[in-house]
Amino acid sequence: MDTHDPRQTRKSRRIEEAVLEVDGVVGVRIWELSDRVEVGIRVAPIDAAPDVLQRVRELIEAMREGDERWEIGLLTEP
Image (cartoon, rainbow, N blue to C red; front, side, top):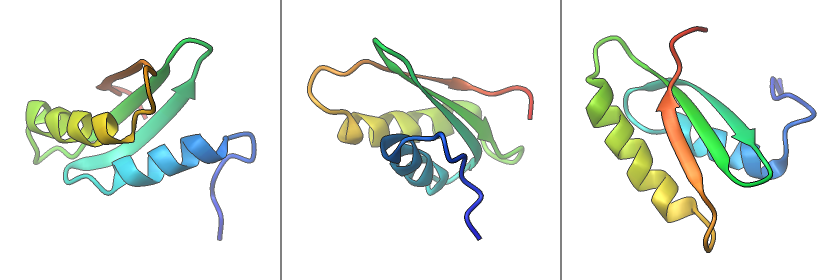
């Protein structure tokens, strides 16, 4: 069953799927804005947020295209 938002772009789905594979990530939201991509993550309660953020930063650095600007942050609400 596909639970993805039909309005979500292929790029957003690819980012979401990749970030969800990172150890310690239990939720993710992607916003594609005109000048940047924003990635919000929810961290598992047993993991240290700074460690998980670093792993996600390393992943998005590899996924970023050219001079795209990506920002990452923690989601505090479901």
